[in-house]
Image 1 (cartoon, rainbow, N blue to C red):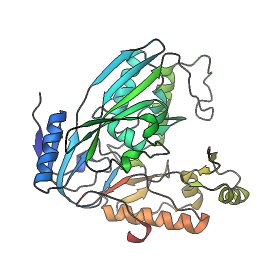
Image 2 (cartoon, one colour):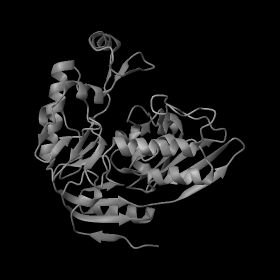
Image 3 (tube, one colour):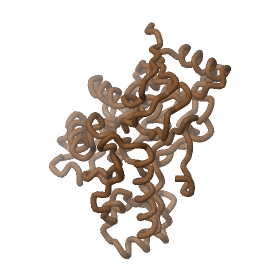
Image 4 (cartoon, one colour):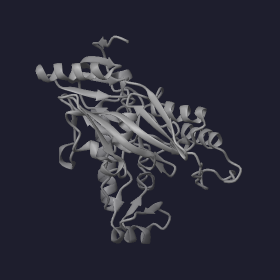
Length: 348
């Protein structure tokens, strides 16, 4: 068993935005017992704490006055059934490591979610998705643990309330609980999910999971900034979902706007297209900028301060609202000195 590692240093290397803020303490945990012990001590001492995986979907707004717990609780268990495999994956496992593991084992079906940063815990909370696949499509259950009484609760898929970049874990189980494990079901009969616009030269009958994985990795590397060179948290904004009536107005003015009809009749509009269409003329605020190859991503190009990134985000939101009458909602979590907060329109 590894001992917990305690550091008193910058969080710069522990958040993909590379924001240079500090915490009272940074503790890496590798066991469930360690996680519970630390959380209980914090509660007894009234010290705030926050649990992170890779820090891939957060923006620290200022120095954190509490303890940052880095989840490194790992493990994968596999059960084979007649027509599928069942995987029980602990929340500190990196998502892309899991995808590579399944490919090595011959379990096919996760390859469309290649190269998505973050750990299993955040994957469940965020309901990650890309190229026609979301976590909810393969998830069977999510195990959470009460940080007060150590009770493990299994939330079956239908009760997780998964939706576009959302789940019940952002609300009902946001405080006092931690995601412990995710159950994943992979069918033995492989059915490829192929986007013709991305895979023009791929035949459905001739392709294989490794080819799809490699192609998506190539696409993401070309399209997305390297987090080791340009700090970012991936897509900063969600693709807005608007009413059918509002969608008709926009589509009558802009026929080429990418849009996707939802089951309830609403329409999802491409946020990247809206930002591209507005044409911000390479706007930069301090060290913050819009990434040229993918306008949905805000980057820390050079020692950006949180306020600069927020100001850029606000400029984009207000501009899109004025031109298209659509409010772009942030996809990432914001963390102030005490913990995660929800930024409303009128406070930043």
